[in-house]
Image (cartoon, rainbow, N blue to C red; front, side, top):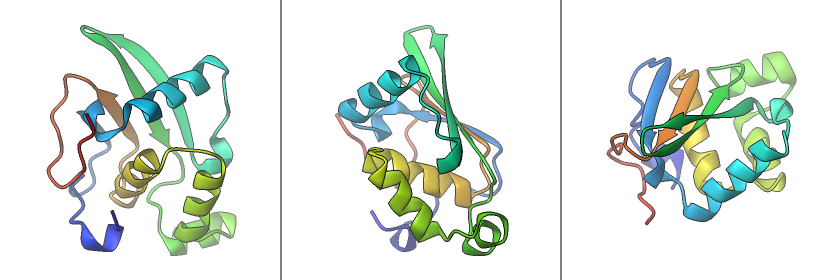
Length: 129
């Protein structure tokens, strides 16, 4: 999924968004929960992970840092571009489906994304079963 080919499903400037955890693969969800258990620090990759219990399971939360992510803002603050940040995230072993959602959210100026099994699916994002 290329960002240039997708209308951003996060809309204009939502600071907080709950989306279906179906937008992540089961392998990705497991990997991210494992990272939470080991207190893995992703600040250098511009986000923080958190979880909290929900009615039917638990939710995975992501706090995005230094939003909005754009070449201009990342270059000014961190001497990075979107492409370099994405490459760093993928080289760190983050699942591609997760990185794609992060980038869509961050370019839409979204601060918090919560992946909830009960939340609505966003039109335009892939669904994984």
